[in-house]
Image 1 (spheres, rainbow, N blue to C red):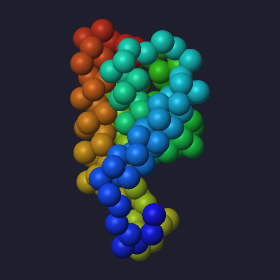
Image 2 (image 1 turned 135 degrees about the vertical axis):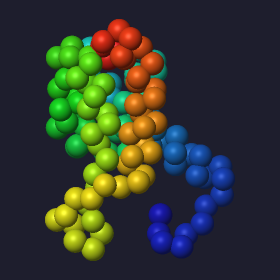
Image 3 (image 1 turned 30 degrees about the vertical axis):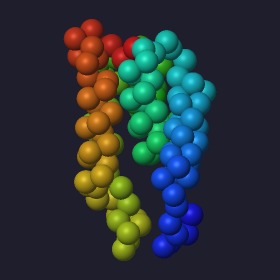
Image 4 (image 1 turned 90 degrees about the vertical axis):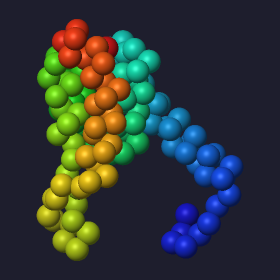
Length: 119
């Protein structure tokens, strides 16, 4: 993709499908505990937004794999910071990441808080 490039709707769907397939595969590579379908989808959404490298190094992943369900759930809402475009050394709260964290959290929260685990 290049700035100003336009794509057809089917081409966009194809690119999104490829990205989501990779995000789901990333979750499969790094999570060592069983996940429900909704938790798997929530983590794929998270990976899609932050990338594999950040996910692989995240406290969220460590908590999920350690069976620390409630603490893993709480981690989703912490991912709201991004690099400032003018000065990449500065992190700022990003509205898009707040929306993404809320979306991932809504998938994960159902049962996450009730059962006190991320499965």
